[in-house]
Length: 473
Image (cartoon, rainbow, N blue to C red; front, side, top):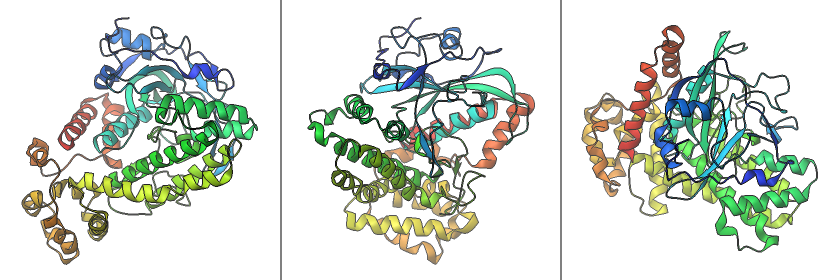
């Protein structure tokens, strides 16, 4: 297999042993139709040189990559699902396929799957993924990356030729296997499994593994203080992730502890939504009847999940240091939200005293526009602050921005400099509207695929999202 010089295999997870994962075989799919390959991501791990046939060998048949894991590993974990503990979890339709070092940064990255067949943790499920689910995840990962959210990247999507029966969409429906590239798939629920089994020895091994491979700056911390140091680092990373979700107007939908990883990176996109407008009660999952994971509740949910991780670490640490680490969430989230909102507005920070009123005014402005002011167009119109005022006041929402409700926000802009104002020269900002990824738009993209196998709208939307990523820098 002709990997490039950037290919650096480093299969670390398998060294943890059989109490952390199970070797599995991938499904034997009747068809292998390549629908998406992320060559930009592939170049970062030295796999962009593969031909399409070689790509399918790796990401449809899952034959081992050179000097990497000899077989896939279904990872073991537990988790809280809608805050109810479930010990019957684990990789039920996916596995860790390979681990590699990222070119330029040296970060350890995972190639892992979704829809690759049954495992010991599948229970009664078929271990498959619908093609629509794969399409939705490719779109979500691309959009989140463009908006600056730490996210896994959809690496490959292969249609697999099976007819699947599902209760929540018209069936039979088409099938696929997705591969994602992520910094880590070690979950809060990975720790929860070993706490549930009362194995402090395994929790210590996991702490050491995570520090060595994902937080090496903590390597010299005294062993007794290492759980606290790790929890503090994960708390800050999780606060940053949550702040970026909020600034992006993103509702994950299923913030269970098995969907939270220790590197503060978003992954596994099921019933997600992007906000059509500012609504803290907006939910993504049709089955979230209580609004537990509503947009405005995502910060408190993340903190709740971090508390569950801290509970696991009490098996290997005193409680008070862990509480101290958790107490860092609120200030970390506040600072990260200020930074994230200023990034979205394309403005430089000045001082916390000045940033807070501006960010509050932006949220207030978003809430006063009603149905006419969608989330993404607001940031598009005012990117760079006063540098975009003329464009905003010539655009389709000029009358909204002239209203009294926007005067406070606009009145704070003269004191702000645009951050990298050269970005406004991009052709992206010459369009009347930004690229968006609202629910109805995704449904239209899927309808073209489902009805006539027309992938042109899907590919066009990915190209538009990539243009936004480049323009936003």
